Image (tube, rainbow, N blue to C red; front, side, top):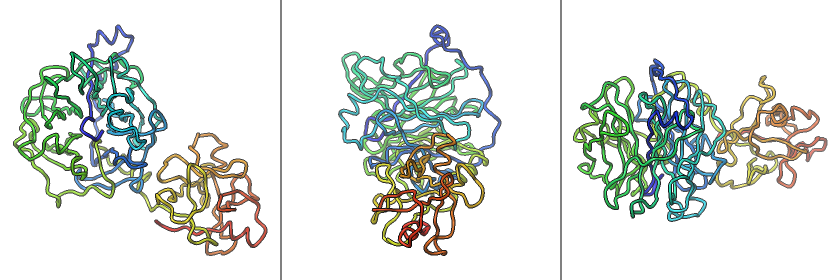
Length: 482
């Protein structure tokens, strides 16, 4: 989340309870023997119109980051509150599947923080993928609905528990308990991120002190005698260590000696740097609005070793990076992500005869407009045609609504989410030809209605047959790199 009561944590029940609830435990499998060569960060950017969605950034050194998808969302929530925050990427123990968990919340809708905390969604939003590039549709899982008086379910995280053979999922919920209404960390267990055990209390600080934004990392071989390290927001960014997930936690310190308490920072990210005994603790500087700041350490169990990286030592890219997560990725995964989201430049489609106007989407309608705001509404990724990937055939994928394409229906155009059907693919595929009004420009012939071309009429996009000089000009465009 972002606002003082955001990231939360869950935990788990015993394996016997799983069996009694009918949840089959996953076989305990060793993590895939992969060499990580780069990093992926999932994050959101803030309370702007598109800020509460899923953004990706990639890095080869874990300190210098490149925004993917031209600093626009990679995934958008189409469920619940239609916005998500605090994303966390979870890798399966076999390394063959990824789950992305996020808070179901959109402050930009105007609901306000009080309603978000005390009358908000009790569900998490989940995506899954086998390659980090192609993701399922989002789904909601109501993990906190059974908590009496639950007002939210924030900042979800999960970690594989080899002893139990399932994932320990944890998050923060604000609710009254033992006479105190505050944020506590709750937990549940799952094997598939579809069916969850009943929520149980996990972390509850004394008195009225709430706790949010818990994240746990497993340390290969242990550090300072601890197998697990966790960071939480509880007035401080508190660091704890344990050799088991549900109990035995010892407070190791905080980062107040570095001038950072819960009044300045939140949303801690813990991760290991690839191939070496060094770890990162990233904290979101929400109070000043500056986004993430990296701290590093060779011993997470000793907070005195934490070092704040100088501004000259890291670069976060163009987008504002708020509460998220970082995982190591292989070179192949990095290359696929860059190929999908980072290759080339976004394009704008400029009208030939109204040169101040560009093809854009507005409320999912397609038209040409001047002074497009936000600019991303007029930015497109020209991808190989969905129905014909041969040279010369293209489809127009929206940059800020990934997975959505310009598609004609009854000769009208709209921005529509791809449904995988042959009909959709044909309706969203066009042959790029020399401009009908000027051969140095371009026109786009329909793939499945070859006598018709994309053109504008009264500034709306249409699919029409072309015969007159005016129609030829209306059907001619220039591709501008943006």
